[in-house]
Length: 500
Image (cartoon, rainbow, N blue to C red; front, side):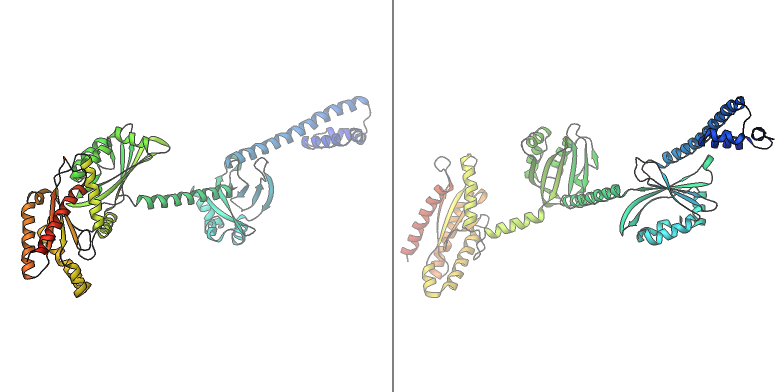
């Protein structure tokens, strides 16, 4: 039997074998191939060429379909595992064999990197050498075949972030599993993504958020109340840092801040400060002030359970949306009391304990403002002088002189006990009388004069006194009144010295 008969006999050579022979022949040299068959005529050659070409095309088509199917399988796999995966492990659940695919860049296709017969054993080795120590426990179930299959069977897939050591530097990766279906039945896919840049950005962002939160908490801790207000609708939320003043808020949310603020001001604000608080918290007024200044501040007092508390309120617009305003209320009682104490110390005469000349000047300044505004109440100025202080200092010493000054101060304070007394010089004092003391000023003056006469006869502090009443028609300042009182005091001093 000749070669052509053998080639064409299906009992001797299968269709697949003939396809391969023809393809191989045509891929080399057709003349060489034909020579092998030793054809007897040209018709056979023409027929063989046609058949072989058709068979060769069929082979190529089969290979293309096979490659296309593989390509589609890999495409489905790649799409299922997402485009940004760097590694994909295809693991046979039954025998543990696996293939590792790698993509060097996101714009490149996956290529087979390696394969192995025991994924679980290799995973354990990898954990021991290259997985960050604190993250090794995450791989406990993956590196154990029994635990791995149990988890997969229960439908609990693996999905976690870990750190892979590259040249001793931890690089963040994310691992995710997908169960193979259809033609991939029995295969588990593990996709690994390099998320180092993303993770470090997130960690830095979280660190910044934590830092900001700590700063915000530190700043917020200064405030008893924070109101977040929509100035268009009036809706607001209230936040408190403690429970002591929680009754001041209308609840955690409200529909009309400005109406509620007006009501609360009447309930809790010190009577003398109600009007100014309500004025600041009128919607139009507040928005106008915030338009002029970035921050609106107000100091006022509240009364809680009969206790006066000093408060500061600061209002600011939100920089990203000026329809919203934040009002922060802080309790500054401790600081205010320290301030008042320091101020009192600053205004207190260290020898006698009464107010000093600085305090007198401050009081004089405030009263002058009222006089200029025609808003001053009636008042009187009393001026006192201690006789014979120089003689006591010269003869008995300054310690005795200090005792004499304290005794004179005590006498004045005893008689003018409802009015402020000031030491304005070495042996000079002054008192400003308003209200009821102003009404009984004549009696008080007579009483100290009587005491001075008695002390002169029996020994004791001799106090000279002079006084003058404020006249709205002629006096332009406190000094005008003081001068008349001082002149009268020197007349009384002369009288006390010239009479036995």
